[in-house]
Structures are given as structure tokens and as C-alpha cells.
Image (cartoon, rainbow, N blue to C red; front, side, top):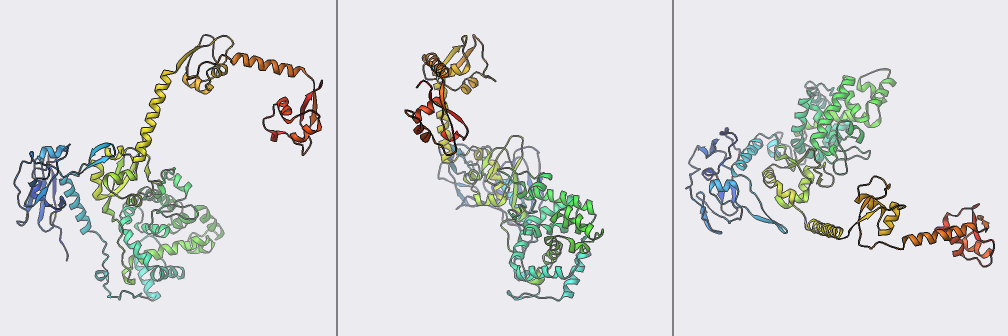
Length: 592
């Protein structure tokens, strides 16, 4: 059954004023079982006028009836409140929205909990949701996608039939397409092989690409039109990635347009640990348009621009030199890299199969989202996909599919940077109404970690306040000695006192945080150690020159009364592996 959408006029009056939902019940059908608002039947709606105080619909038939204006201020939980001919069971909530206060309605808003933090889920405005639904219906009615083989099968093919055509027919069809484009859509043997590849062996892939074309081609065509470039360039993304925004090659090319890292950087495609703009359909399409425009400016030939997009302008220039200066793609064909020899023929074959898919009994596979079924919002803070899923119930898998540029499922939210999030169109209102709740959401483990960290910081703060000391620098003291006295690190003393170096002066006040009492034995220990070292220095020693293969055990055995520990102490050896052949070490005092 075919539906006809009447012409809809939406007039917004009293600009800047809030929309009231007082009379919305007169233009909405309410499902009493699910508390859901259904859109108006398309064959009964002729126009909508939205004013500050009312919403009026001009019905063509008596299918929309006015509901009584009931005062529901005193409605109790579980009571039935009449909004229209149907009845709706409502729940009382602690916090009502401004719209509910104004319209005197108790909205069916389900409460939720962020573990220990209460929040109220804010439902979308009914009027705006209705308008969004009508706009989506308008796009759907005018969509070019028709997956019904029975309707598209004008040739009455059998389901399993694979039509075959003569070379003359292929040439005639390509000649027709060639007259509509600045590309040279030539029919020859390489092109014929790719046509057979798509029409015979990759029929399933072509069917999927026909469906995905309804997702991505509107964006491609808009950008190509903006840059005043041939619209047939949209088919290049099929050759590159088969319209898979998450595609990646072994060489490192990524995204719909298969940008290499360095080329993507040149055209503003940022790559970080969190984000890869090469996977962003919008940004990569803009970059592809700019790059192709640059290549066409070099050669003034779209076929050579395509070749250069695949293998780089350097290789195309080498092919031109080897050919003696020729600039026709087919004359350069034998001098180009093997992959590039099939690149332009594949592009021509894709032009053909996408235009003549029905003639080959191939029909679109419905994509997950059509172009108008998704929209973008600006994200202002760091957020994880799992937070969005928890608050507005959009599955994480769908968010990853719609936003392949976020590699870890995290939007960083760096101040000064702009980040966009693609959502199903019907979920945009829920996101905007509950944006702060999403930013404030924490998983159970994150909440525990955050609480433990806060407790630890508070304890540390209290501990630091209780153990704060002030040390006055005396004559002969150095920072290292002071740190040793209080059993703290020099770096900590510098940090506590905002010192850029370890230089101190007599009388300087130093703040010290420590639970340890000052060590009074520091100076005597140092003096004793210095005296012992001086005594050892004044003695004469017997020495041993290390040979290859010597170990401390072998050396100690060579000298009577000498132990390994004695050798280590005399030579201050901490790691015996650092001893090398030719080094001279002390064995014992010469007097012994």
C-alpha cells in the first residue's frame, strides 16, 4: 500500500518563547499500555501551527478529537488521568520538569539511580518529538531506497537468475554514462573483467553497497557539490573501501577514503591514542575532496588524478617520463604500478554496476541506518560510550558503528577542542535532555576508585597538616643533609618549598612534612665514616690486576687470609659484574 504525505507547514511564532504542551493532547494519540506518543496519521494532517500557548492541528477528518483540559495537579501515583479518549497511568516523580509545571501535566518520566546519586531521566518534549517524527517520515517517503525485489524487478527475472549481456550492450551503456561525466568511461578488456567481477562473483557485495549508498552518498554528493567536483567521484569510495568506514589495508590506509597516515595529517586528519579522524566519514570526505582537487589541479585530467590518488603523484610522473611525456591514462597504463592499472578500470566498472544493478538482478540490502536516521551532537566533556548506553539506552555497539573514529570508545573532551557524536536521530533529544547526567555518570568501579582516591587524599592532607615542621638552615648545612635528618627525599623538600634548585642559605626557613623525628645521629655517623675512609686512604695496599675469567672467589683464593667480602669492602664493589679484565683492585693492606 502506498501512502501520500500531505504538504506540511510548520510555523514557529513568538520566537524564543517556550513551547507549551497544554493542548498537545488534542493532536496526539496516547498508547495507554506503553505511555508512548504516536505520530499523527499522514492522511489526516494538513498543517500545524505552533504558538507559545497552544498547538493546533487542522484536521481533514474527525479523526483527531479535542480532549478535556483536566487539572492533574492532585493526581496521585497510580491514578488514571484522562489526556484524550485513551487513559494513561502516570507515576508521581520528585522533580517535575518546567514543561510539566507549565502545562499542568505529570509526565511519565522513569526515575533512575547512579548508584549512590539520584537522578531523574528527562523525557523528550512531546511537541518537538512529534515534529522530528514528521520530518523523518518526510525523508522516508522521498528516500530512493527500495529493497523490494518484486517492485524493482521490472524485467521479471527469477530470483536466482544472473543475466548476461553482450559486449556491445556493455559498451552502449557505458557510452551513455560517459556522456554525462567528465571522466573517460571507456569500455575495454580490463573494464570488462571488473564488470564481470561485480556482476557475477561479487553480487552480494554489490547488494550491500547499494544499501550503504543510501547512508553515505548524500554526504559525498553534498561535499562534492560544495567543492564543484564531479559527483561520480562518490563511487571512488566503493573502490577504496566498499563503503566500510572502519576499513584498513595492510599498508596502513584507513577509513572510507583509505588515507595513509602522512597524507591524512597534511589534510587535517588528526590521529591520537583516542581518535583517528581517517575513520570519521565527514572529515575524511572533506579531506578526500581537497586532495582530489589538488591532484586534478596538477594534471588537469581526472583519470590521472584518480591514478595519483591510488599510487601517488610521484609514480604517475615517472610513468609520464617513461612514456615519453604522454598524459592519457590508457597510454600510460603499461608504465603504472600493477595495482594502479586496475584502479581506473575498477572505478569505471563500479560506475556501471551501481547504475545498472537492476539490469543484473541485484537489489539493495537495507543498511543499519539511512542518512536521515542519524544525526550529530556536540560533546563538551569527556564521556565513554558505556555512560551513554547506561543513561539513554543506545547500545554501545551502535555507538561504535556510528562513531568509528573513537578508537577506544572514549570521547576525550579536551578543553578548546570540538568533538561530535553521531546518534540515532530518535535518540538526539534524549541525549540533549540528559547531557549533564551522562557527563556525571560513573560506573560502579569508577565510583569506588574515585571514593577511595578522595579518602586517601583527605587522609594525606590531614597527615601532612599534623606533621608539618619548620627547619631553619644553619651554617654548614646542605639540602641533602637536612633531608637525611628528617628521613625524606631531597626532591620532596624542594617541592614543598617551591625550590628550583638545591641551593639554600643560612637562616632560610624550610617547610618539612614528616612523621619521623629528626635524626640526631646523622653528623656523628658521617664523621666516623669519614675518619675510617681517611685511615684506609693512608694505608698502602697489595693490588691484583684482573685477568679474563677471574672471579672474586678465584682472586680471594690466590691470597692467604683474604675473603671475598674484604675485597668488596676495600674496593667498594656493589656489583662484581662491572669488573673488567685489566682493572686493578685492592687485595689487602701491605702491612698484613
